[in-house]
Image (cartoon, rainbow, N blue to C red; front, top):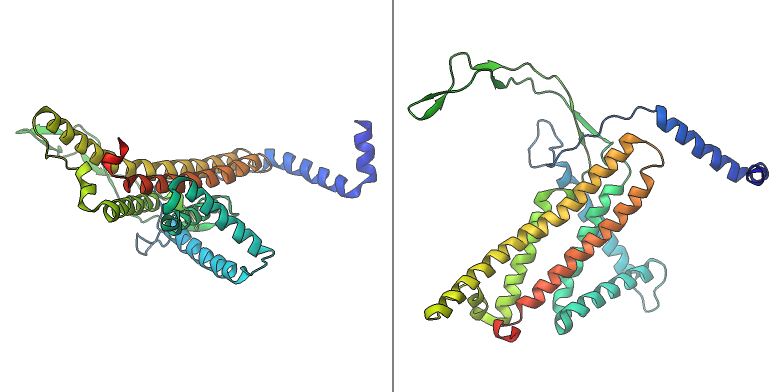
Length: 316
């Protein structure tokens, strides 16, 4: 301990860093942080504007712009002997292609453009969560001033229907509370975005299957040509395959949405409990989870693409 204090006295830089950390720790106990605002759905940015222009949509537009700029800079950086950012771009593209090839084999060149696009968009969307100001920089929406109806007495039944008694409805008092809406929300934390991605992937699955096998591809969903007991079994199996295909859309969208939304809530809660230092490990965790979720989404998409191009008879 004595040696530690001696080193602090001899090293001004280390001493200043230590003092700064201690000040932040002490300040964390006394600094009042607003309660985190958590909304399951994306929120409209403009109070009197269109409902569809949400903070998640705004973030999606910014993510698209950033991806386009990075792609342009990356393309300009690719040379016969790349250096700097060009090396990073080449390494990233090569790594993604090798991963695609490990699953898709000879079809890797066909799947790679959409697979890489999915990965890049998802990972950029996931990392919006760790940007400074997300959840803390936004706009206040004033109360609308509308009155709601509250039921104060039980409903009465009349001829099998439900009606309100004469004094059952009364205007509720205005809450008069302002609503804070953050400018940015991770696109992956909006179920609309993840559902759209899942639908795109599954539509492409059907496209690749039909392009490789023709109309025979749809036989695995509608196999009613058999006779007797085995014909009934094949028909039921086909219906189960169709249900499974629809279920993939749900699992795809909710897996990504659930992980990123949970991370957003976790960071907000940690920052509320202790403003300084405590959230830092959780930011590192979000970087890891964001990468893993993007990778999983891409690899599952490639696996589904590859499986769809294999005929049902080829499985046996």
